[in-house]
Image (tube, rainbow, N blue to C red; front, side):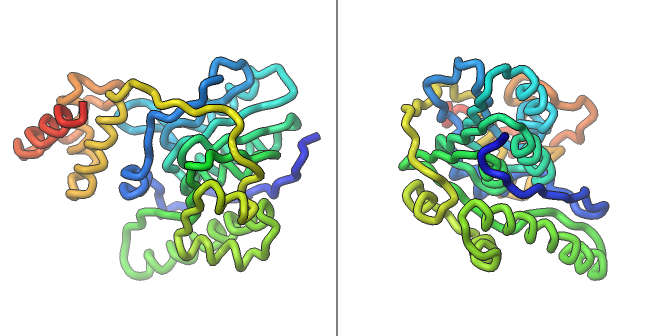
Length: 276
């Protein structure tokens, strides 16, 4: 039996609201290179990327991948390493439910950042450890909605049960009233390692060492993508630019709309050289 009976999240994907990608502000705060030294252990699942499929690298952490990893682990304990800025809320919920329903002990280790959907996943741990220099961020569901004022009002109402479900999960872990957890979310609260333990969202500090990965290529491309997103460059244009700069990005679709402005291509190449 699992040590802690975390509440299940029962949600269906709303028809007019989509969570496309992580908040660009979170991407700036994420150090993608952090990893644990003992990742070669057979019972370790690494969530060291955005949540959900990454539309231009083919990366990202999906519920399908986590389900496969859980089936492959034969031991009686699962370790989940997290360093993620979040991403697709619904994929995060699916991963959370996969972990919480597993009968084995689940130990979550927050190596650097567990923000947004990644913080929801962390709550599935029977034991949650966090680095002293690590961070956890909780907020209300972040989405993109399109339509007239009635559609937008409907979207806001549609998101209310999602925020309530997240508040229940945080409150259950921390042992506080749901109103307290909801206030954390309303304020988009950042917890450092000590604050997360004090609040009850984490149980203890990491005992294992954390190192920084020397591979910088994917991290640099993500930083370029974040900078272009802040300049309101469309997703299709960013996708085409990054594929061009990287010499053909894995997983990029061939029928994307090309960027019409050569200045963006020059900026992307310049940024790539700067971030190497």
